[in-house]
Image 1 (cartoon, rainbow, N blue to C red):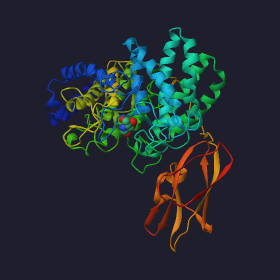
Image 2: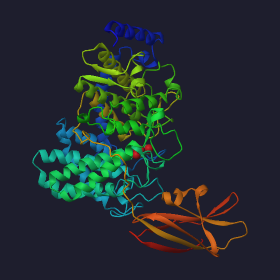
Image 3: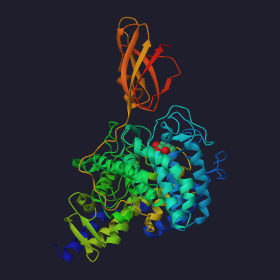
Length: 581
Ligand code: NOJ
């Protein structure tokens, strides 16, 4: 163990190194850092709250036409048109509102949650391109703001939606129960909630579009939020006497927790965001996972990716560092200072930069509770940003190392808020993104989720402790079991006359039909020409869209519109007989 004197000297020497870089851009912009962050938050908090409420129907000032309880993503209608309601954005928005209600900060918002509940209950029943309430429609990512189905092509399904919605309602349900409303919860809320939880239980290991709606595979955020929903769903079911679902939810929760560990990229110190997609996998998907799964009763547990866990801190460093050299606005910062971050290497987003701050504030909450910081080989690189010669060990609150680390991490976290502050226009409005070149707002204006992310980051800085969702004391099963998804064997026959060199292929809307990728299309056999044929295993009870294409060398010709659309049976086999058109 090194002496306190050496540690102080190290911290002092390190401070000199930081000063040697001169004033960072953010520090030049804001002379008095502490006053500035406090005044930014004091100014921005009410703006963010009003901005969020303005985007909720029926009376939000920027959401006219939205039904009661419907959250618009943004009032922007052109480039991009965000005047839709995404289940993810809406659920995360109402999680913030529910937290304000259950913490007693603003119980006047309760009526809005009731409207949200009624709206989601109706939406669950709206048949849409992903299916009906019982055949996959619960994972439809977005709806029109009058609660009708959005029928354009989109990255669907997105299976984080039902889980996020369930988490928001469980938060509300637990508060209602604590306030004597168990009967209402059992009669009204539980049936709606159960649809989502059953959906998660039965579909978690099917492929999904990620939260950025681009990659169709398995996704860390989706897996993690599904895990959380089933755990807290099982606990709520117990309270409500719904014993029949508990073991099913817990069984699949254990499988999800097991699967969650498989995203770990040990060699490179981060969690890969998606199993597909071909990118590095460094993605704010993982930072959002950490803050969404925050449960202080679990301490710094690595299996549930708690904000102060070694793996989540290591992951945060890799993620933040990946943005240092790719944005002009990040030039000139010391290697241990906050910078603007995005979803993955593209333009910076307010919500991803706020999320980094939030993870760090959450970590500080737990270290304060534990009165200790543990540094191990996995988290060492993260902590060495602040004390370059730091050794692994357990640093109690009485040590100067603990104080230096806490102060440094707090400053680091504040830095991310200040970066967003720097690029917040004077009216406080928060768009979706800002440019990497000069930080001017970009893409959808007044993004509801940007406002929500500001509010949760500010709350974490204030020490807000969310209710536990049951992350404490979980054990990862020694081997992961998949939840078998029923499949059906489907034979596709199409009558098509072809010329020499031409062949017929099949593509469609699910991964088994190659997600519309002509390069990966499934070849059909011409053994019974002019009938071309192939048999494919597809998930049961699922609406699929598909098309045949003809290829001749590099020439690709698609059958004419519309797509063929069909719902697979629950089990068994089926044959489809089509004619080329
Ligand atoms: C695009 C984002 O990638 C997605 O996560 C979000 O749900 C929608 N915009 C709406 O905000």
